[in-house]
Image (cartoon, rainbow, N blue to C red; front, side):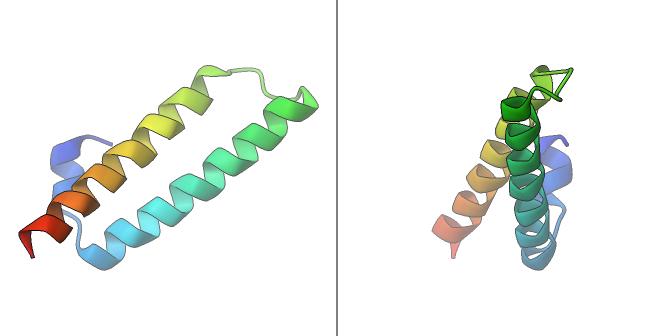
Length: 64
């Protein structure tokens, strides 16, 4: 998800996306630990998505 798309989300949607991304990252970590994960690049992609969401949430917090 691109930063411009994230900025268009409401605060509730942003929080929901963040929770979903964290849960998906947890599941990917679990799959990686058990050896079932084939595309390990998904881990870093999910981590970057979480960072983007947190950055925009922080931007909004500072504006308020």
